Length: 283
Image 1 (cartoon, rainbow, N blue to C red):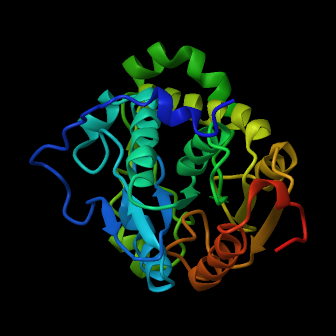
Image 2: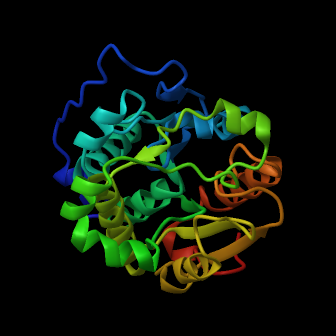
C-alpha cells in the first residue's frame, strides 16, 4: 500500500482568494533549512491568524511552517457560506502535497476543525512525523445533530446567526484581534458536521504518533471528544495533555506558551523516527 496515498489522488486545484482578503488572514509560510516542516491547519470560519504565534515558535526551533487558508475563509461571510467541506479538505490535502516537495519530514498540527482535517490527511499518510490535534472538533453537539435534518426550515426562519462564544478566547486582547467570521448558517454548520464526521472516522487509520492537547475549560469541545480522539486513534504512540488555562482557541489564549512547548516537544520526539520504532516510550 502506498505510504502517501493522499498525494497520489491530489490534483491541481485553484481556489481564488480574491481582492477582499481580510488583512491579517493571509497564509503563513516560513522556511527553514532543517528539512523538517509542520503543516498548520486552522479552524472553521477562522484564519491562519490563530496559528501565527505557534508558527513563529516552531520556526524559531528550526522548522519550516506552512499554514494555508481554506477556500471561502478570510474573505466574506457569503464566500464562507458558499464553500464546502470537500473543498476545505481537498485544499488542505493539496497544501500538504506541495509542502512535501520542500521538506523531508512533515508533521501536522490542526486546531479545532483543523484537527479533524489533520486526522483525515494523516489517515492516508503513513510517512508523517507526527500529528498534534489541538481542541479537536470531531463531534457536533447533540442539539445540532438533531437540528441539521431541519436545516431547510432553519435557513428560512433563522438565517444567519451569531456564533461567537465569549469563553472561546478568554484573553480579551486576543479576543479583540480575532478575524473569525463569528456568524454561521445552517449550510455552513452542515459542512462542519461533515468534516467532523470524516475526521472521527479517520482516527483508526492514523499511524503517526498522535498528541491531543485540550483545555479543561473548552466551551466548544467536550472532554469526552478529546478522550475519543485518543482512544480511537490507530497510532501506537499517543497521549493527551490537559491545559488548565484558556478556552477553545488555546493557540492565542492564556497558557498558549505551554501549548507551544508541548506541541514542539512531541514533534521533535517523533520527526526523526522510522515508523517501525514508533512505540510508546521510545525516542
